[in-house]
Length: 344
Length: 250
Image (cartoon, rainbow over all chains, first blue to last red; front, side, top):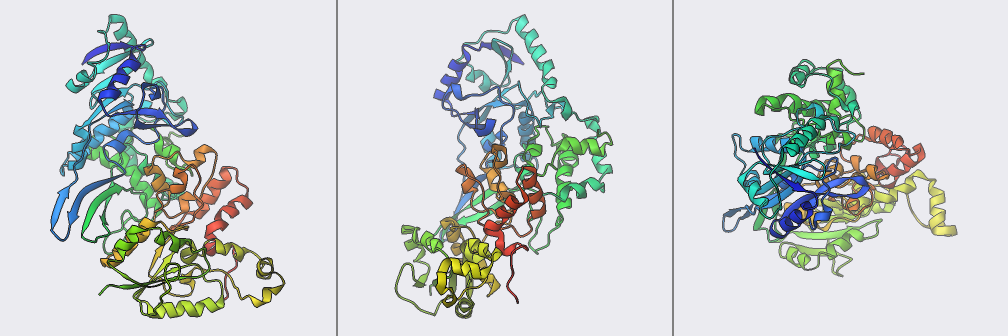
């Protein structure tokens, strides 16, 4: 992979010039010490020292609510909605990049998802190696501390400069207004060192105590373990763990008719398998009626089914589910360790 | 022929009907599809011949029952509007108190002249076909229910907690901001509007069908609320479904 370096004194000028030419989304501060991805208005807003974003950048590829098509029942006319604005997202962490790479695989498999793929084609990603981790993060042990595809540019803080890996041609084009230099031997050494230190950023208390390759078998063997029922007793079925997850992609499709009762829109909205109505079918039956059945399903989806489907665990270790769960039952770290028989 | 619709109110602030008037020009658009035959807040005409009755307010007097039953007999479809009608609303706070004291507090020494009993949602008296929750109702949701009824569909009212909408909106959880709320057991559909504005969820849309209230009481205590404070959180809007409140003798 080609690489360059940019001095930190030059960096804000580059971001400022990108803001002028691109529709830039960046990682910014939110209230209560939290961070979120949002429209970047100035380079000063960019917070590459963040720990984790409230929502993963998924929201720009599969928005919480989006139009699929508009229709008119008088003229029998249907128009697909395909308004995909080009955007550049700055500040994606490796675990979230893994999440996006998984979504790319899911949405281009079997049924090609026009909306997702149309949007994805118009999204440029400038990733960054983390310098901090949230108290809930455990990406150090999920194989997601590094990423080698999906991005256009990747930044690593190496002291007074950023090391830039160039992932694509359009990434290279984004660098055109930047005052960059070729990476020296020292830069490459520093980059290597920064990379090797990445695994020490998450708290040691967030260790996965088993070999992650064993996770699918551990879960398969514990389909009837008491953990599901025990934890689900205090589950709200609120779907928070689903909705903040970078690899959850389920959606519901609804109709939104206009008041003239002839035109309307078909919209899709985020859904979650923890919600009570998720598995209710037309006849009225609900095939995951019990909280514990839904609770187990989410874990199996992450640790077993997606591994079978796309070859990767659908848990990237961001810790958002654990952090969002008020009764504190969603944490994959404690669940994996407990099922492995390796808890403290 | 256009369906004939009528609006009625019981114990309430009439804020839900006001929301309908607040539709302004879109109300005119709705009138292309329906004929309003009774709407005390917006017109003086009245007819007892209607297809759909929209009822605001809770039932707080024995004498309300007769009027409710008459509406039910006249209407093909009854829709409850707002927290008072759908879940009893804040009127049910009085159900936790001594009823004579409550009457004295409001009506003074003439209290015996004023008939009142435990507040209840209209469903406690008559069959309700659909409910538009919230305090006050959301105009958009009212329109969405109206459109569904006009096109022969089942109206969509979410049966999941407000957390879903908070997460979709990317809100920082109120519990992370040093506050607490009842969003995890409250029916969504409001778009988490209060939390979006920096406030908390008070539960005005009522509980979801299968809320984990025990889990939420535990969580609230974990976040340092006293048992009394936890009770108060649940009393504000959930009084009718709270087993600690007095129940009418049936």
